[in-house]
Image (tube, rainbow over all chains, first blue to last red; front, side, top):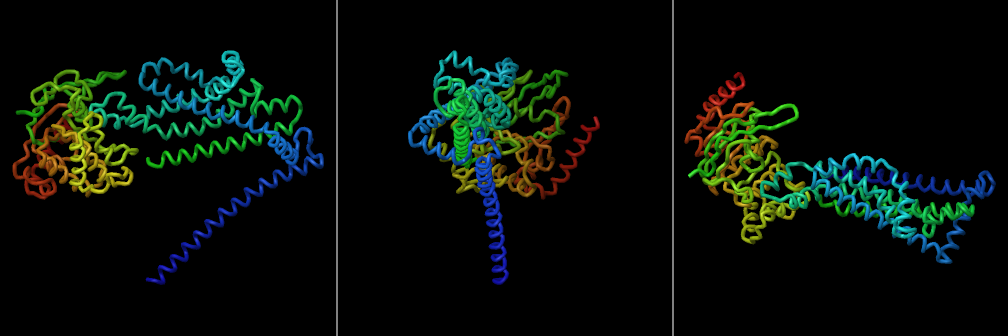
Length: 269
Length: 256
């Protein structure tokens, strides 16, 4: 019996070891691709295989980064863009959820508004940019509005669908206790749709980045979007690529943060 | 006095294609402490009738009297148990069983304590802080029963509450529910299509025909079976003869 147990333990250890090994292999190749990409970029740029004026090189991007950090201009731009994006996507998600609640509350309204929602959803929201800027002024406000507007309609549609898909019987249980419509919403519909709302949050992070960057293109005052458009105008592609890399990094970090929040909040259900 | 009187209930559903009559002239009365079963083929409007009694649907015609008074939809005196437990997965068992009290705005400490004591009585002690997914199917259905009983309803409606459980759990739960309801002298109304379950649990059985739903026969379960809990009743000699009677009755309905 003891011998049998120790054999099983041994096999289990081996199994764990193989899992660890696989994980290490994956990480190794991920790092390899990363290094290879930047190395190739650097070499290609130095040997003029690609035009260094257009594609810059990792080393010149690095030097620009250090310089921008030293003169404090980078933090200003990053800070502004980050604030706009965070406000944009929280506002978009909140507004979308509120609209969805309104549609759920008045089923007739939802049927009346249905074609308009379809049109609004199909329309590319960034096309509204110039109008927003004229209406709200070339500032912070209109960029946040861009970040919000791009996600609000799709949030409304997705969350409303999830409201409707909540099992009728949960509402039935509440109604047998004489629950009001408001109680049905807060006790069953909303908490049952919570996972959907959180997952739209994840999608909205990405969408808001699009809205905010386009907004900054148009307003052209500050932020990472402004850095891209400015770099493009003065033909400084090192600046464009630096901004791009920072955006990629920040967007990923934000996405991961929302994922962590999602896991924490949904642990219970 | 009757606890429940169903008077000439008819109900018609309207769809785009047609008007479907689910129930036609259904009348019955139930005494306090009685256990009644509705038996019949699917589509005989049993669940519709239950929803009408619960006040969830307004019948096309007829009325429901509870203790001689027309039902007031605001004041809930009826408990409803569904085919599945429908415990809210984001609430703990404690929150789940007290939700009825919360919805009704009853903030009575004693009533909450009673609900939690009932959990223990049902063999569910120590799960108050757990979530429904941590419990087995039978435990969940027991918790759902506690939730229904917590608001102290006058009449309990059971809509095939054992149909989603495995056979062994079902038999055990039948006994537990039967004993609990007898202990608190509760009036209950069970919808089922399991003949054995109807015989084992009830005092009276109403047999329904389908399309439209009508009561075709009322069967009084003999005293010898009524006094036994369901599991013992299933072993009794009178059980199989009554089973045969009801079986034939249902066959006749199908052929008609």
